[in-house]
Length: 398
Image 1: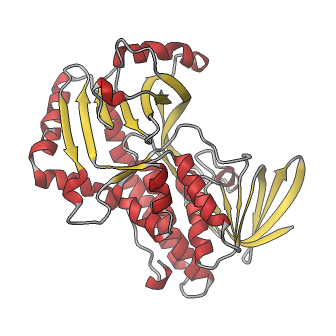
Image 2: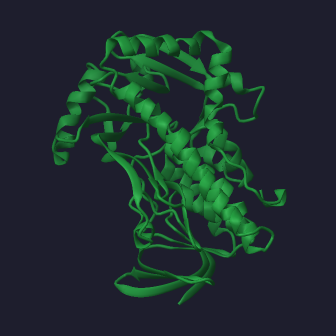
Image 3: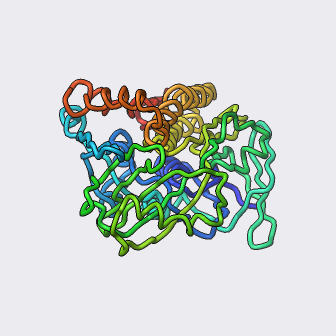
């Protein structure tokens, strides 16, 4: 039997950053992960300016920026007319020292957080360990897991479940994952090709009901992400065969791109019925899942972590009442349901489903203000800060 103060289930960015915050606060932490290493499939890769301060507080911003890069420029591109609407995060400079977004694959951010976590004597990470059972009482939580064909038992004062949208912990707690699954399929691709030479900005939001896509530079090695949408009625095992036709259209005449990775997946707008059950807390995609258009999924997960680790630390040290964990859960769910999920759904509609010319023109009238109206642009840039919540604990914890 293994004992820790806190067990974090899931070694993705949300789990590892929660664990890092706890460990740096002096809490003994064990992370358990069912995979043998950090998963590197194409997923999130843009971190809004509003979450960069949290990375800095944890001491991982500089290492993350060495692997990725800072970026201020954005562009909406209407595929059918080639109209471009460009804007920049430069207007944020009087308001924050982090007036830029960070581009970096989420696996790389997880690797940075992991490296920092493993330098701490009160933290450990256990791989190849699949949770299969959970019991809790008023004093502790016991997890049963399978590791290399053997059964293991872990006990802790608290458990943070950050094990993704298919969370096994959430299932064991019998918590409903309420919401919808979108009828379309997303295909995320990592491509090695200089899209800028073909006229694309480093962050291009391409609007079209057939060829809509998010095209963004991941790092300075020439790696780009292109995420597009297709009918889920099409056979998933034929995605790779259909893919060249898509790139033939968005990169006409180009044949020398390198497909590094791709990942087809279904999209959801869902939230757990409860984010806390007794001594178990859900965070990140285990608590809420959104389609990725606009990068609000991992943004929400990071804000979960930033508010959770100081709150949980204060409770465990007796400096805050248990009720602050319920407050954390209620506030994080409200931020997702009222702000993140509706905006991500609207982003998806605009980019991938603008098939009504009248509605599209109304959208473009509004978007053109990004280029011409500084106040409107600043209001839009400040949006992601609305997803943040502050811990209701003494300031020394954060």
